[in-house]
Structure formats: structure tokens, C-alpha cells
Length: 127
Image 1 (cartoon, rainbow, N blue to C red):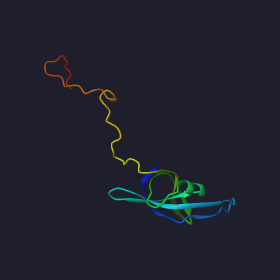
Image 2 (cartoon, one colour):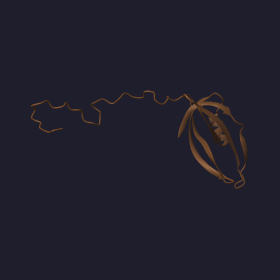
Image 3 (cartoon, one colour):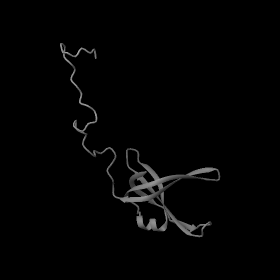
Image 4 (tube, rainbow, N blue to C red):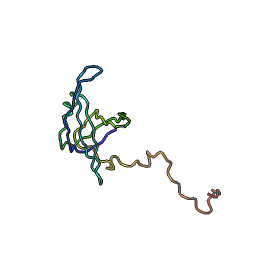
């Protein structure tokens, strides 16, 4: 999935050491505002110090993020996790903007409409 918008908040990076493997980890959360008549906001995270440094997301950036959504249970409650795996700088075309011309009659998958038969023609079908 992907969303395009503007970064309106950059949270502090968090990190630690995995209890299972002993490896260190780092994650950072961001808030993306998607424009529209009623703007929507989405919190997403980037996992891994290498990805955080590679994406270098700053407040005010116009981005398209590609992400996966997963849910996890903790103490009987469920939480969504929106994790970005790709970041594209700059604004992508807005939905609804013309992308390509309408197909011509020559490329249409439907046959052309036929004119109704006039009275007195050899076609004697009632429809």
C-alpha cells in the first residue's frame, strides 16, 4: 500500500537490545498528513538504523511512503503497526488527475453502436 502527503511530526527514535537474539534494534515514528477536503493523518514507523538513515525523513518533507500493515496483541488488546519499507521524495500525481486519453473507437473492446433500422428495411426483427 502507499500514501502520499506531508510529514507533520517526527518522533524520537527508540532502540534497545532484543531479548531473544541479543541484537540491537532501532525504530522511529513519523506522522504523515494526507491532503484532501478532510485531511487524514497516519502514524508510521521505519525499523532499522540503516533504513532510518537512508530515508532521512524530516519535518515538512513531501513523501510517498510504501508500507505494510500488521497487527499484534498485547495484554488482550490489539495494535496496528504501519511499517514503511520504501520512501519516494516529492509529490506523486494526485488521484483523479487525468493520466491518459480515453480509448478511441478503434481500440475499444466493444463493437461500434449500430444505427436503428428504418421502416421498410429487410430486417424484420422486432427489436
